[in-house]
Length: 191
Figure 1 (cartoon, rainbow, N blue to C red):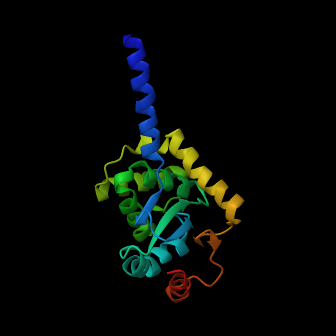
Figure 2: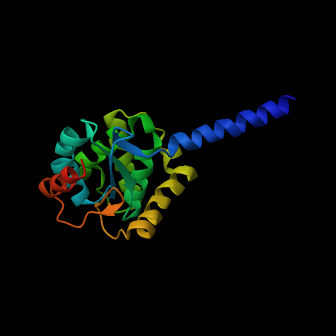
Figure 3: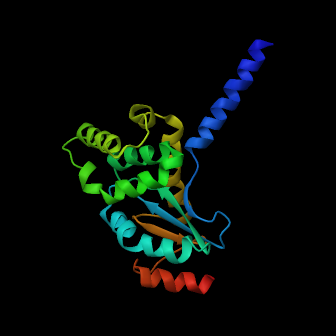
């Protein structure tokens, strides 16, 4: 009987652990009328610009008001972005904060002549910012790795994503030049 309880505990414990690691990073009301999907790579300078120049106004006008939500999906363009995505995804409670910090301070951690140097910079950055993450465990977590890679595969398959950032609004690819004015026009038509 103890073995059965142990197996049940392990199964449900692992299931909970898997789900906690692989929830979408979402900002805004979960049941908002408008769903924005942002396919991004954490080493992409245009993605960092989106977070600096567009996202704050988008958050203020549409996300915080309950009109829209945004799901950040991973589309790593290189191994450094892949590892950073795993770190952002690893601690769901701090996921959005980690994501924003990585974009805001991109030049601080993406330096390095090798992936080992970049990983070391990433690890030092995460520690310096005080995020509660077991770096090695997160980098080597197979569930998170699969989740991140599946985001990329689904982006290509479902929306023909081939660059970052790519914005999808209510399952339609945003084709205009990415600035707040153009984004706002489309969103206002959907309200």
